[in-house]
Length: 314
Image (cartoon, rainbow, N blue to C red; front, top):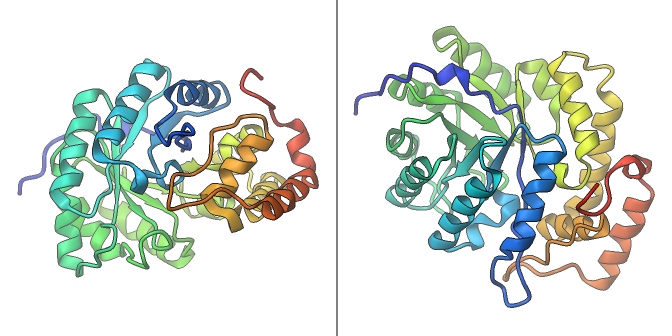
């Protein structure tokens, strides 16, 4: 397979990437009216780009046609205000590649794909999986390392380097694994031969990732506390890591409060900030009343939320 020459590959920098949830109506259908409000909120409150539908957007619970409609709606609604990064992960290589092709044709600025759901292929097949998805498009292509979401399957430095050698539109790696030794090794080795290689933090742990060399960050918590997340990102991009520690500690506390409920907790927190995006789609369940009360108490104890916007209009 021949790599394609992408002349402006280094020009795309995702910056602070907001990863919005997917709102559902009571009949389980996507609530596009709410989704439009949600996108507008993210754009107004500091998103340099949007990535969807990521794990927080319940991608694995969406049919392929739903994902296509969601992406097309987002690109049309955002109307060029910020770039949209399409999430093309899937169990089948051809399915993921077809979605990537659709995303490019629809106007996505970049594509991101993680390891196959359920399957745990050997390294050689994992490389082939990623290469085939990336080769289906000409726009920038990112690989997502998220072992906690994909049954422990990890992207190694060797895998990333082999992908980079075969794809000139391979822009870099989004890492949610929190393995700092891996990230240091990856950045030091990848940038020797591919100077424009980008490391993107897949979580809000930006102080550590930024010190290693990450210059972009994907945030799910930006829907809840966009001002704190923006402060954290801006300080880290300016390499003011000591000054960024309060914002880092605040986002860590927010994540700790929400995390036991995962997506249900995230959506419950959004509702508590007066931005109701419905409940998760089955088989996920909404938080039980006692857990709702516990989350509400935990959020009330976080002083940082007093300075965050409430509702859709703020």
